[in-house]
Image 1 (cartoon, rainbow, N blue to C red):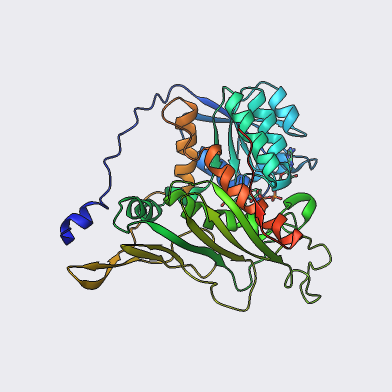
Image 2: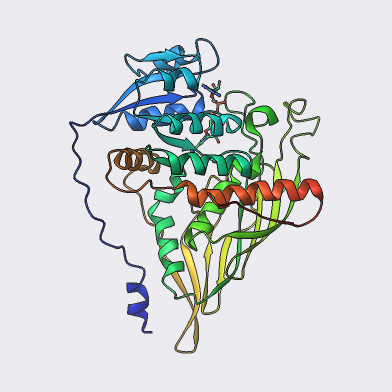
Length: 380
Ligand SMILES: NC(=O)c1ccc[n+]([C@@H]2O[C@H](COP(=O)([O-])OP(=O)(O)OC[C@H]3O[C@@H](n4cnc5c(N)ncnc54)[C@H](O)[C@@H]3O)[C@@H](O)[C@H]2O)c1
């Protein structure tokens, strides 16, 4: 194929413009008013067809203080997710709770016919993920999982490159990311305690790396996993929260995917290294390198590079990084609201993220057992 037609294969598809009826309002509730709830509220406030009507948090007074701090306006306050859902005030909710309560809040809202935007990671265990998918299937509400890096034009470009066929058959993928020192304790210790987080770096930022590569190759089923996890940095007596740290700060996995693809994964909240490696897709006709970032949060660190052969020459094609005019978080919220209003599918469906969660949980379980395990998923 000539070089011009190769580049044609990666061009943007024409995006159909959505006709929005802005007079039809969606009434939204926020479950969990911690750190990430702020980003949800700010993005909803940019949607003229959204009214935030309710806030809930387990900690007395937290939702009220949040409301005042972020000028949320006149809303009803509730002590937990059940009271908020039972109030009947909302059409949709954002589940912004810590990981350990993602499943119960999401399932309860879906069972009561509400639509749900659920923060990442989807939950903690595979069993919870299966239960969420079943509730999603049975509900009249829509469910989308909060992976905002999906909406980055560079991420979409990566997917188009992989799907174009130019790389031939993809047989090996390396992914992951890391932070030299980046154990997240922004407003407390909910990320590092087993009772609230369930999983550490593996779920928190590992889910982004997995979504980047699995979404690019069309989310094939995971078959087997050999996993490892450790907590050397979190448990180091020199670390200020070592006494409560009870999750992983590093994890790695070797995963066999349907279609004969090998996935090699590693993720770190803390390490003595700048990066545990770029993401690479190796194909029979070409490979692509996705540069990592210094402080991994799921974004693409620089221009993508394709390594291939053209007319017998070994060529590197550099795809310059696209600038984003709109914030990915705002697009995540807008596209969820569009799906709630019947304009399009949920942007990040639970049926895909089930496989993401099964790998995360598979790594955790394999690490605990000390050997490779098979991933078995029931019919949804
Ligand atoms: N998409 C992103 O960029 C991004 C960034 C940060 C965090 N997150 C995710 O968002 C989630 C929340 O993170 P955070 O930093 O805001 O946590 P946080 O601990 O600051 O806030 C969570 C809040 O949820 C409340 N809560 C828990 N269960 C509840 C229930 N049943 N009903 C009502 N309230 C309940 C807690 O009391 C707490 O105030 C995590 O799963 C995290 O992975 C996503």
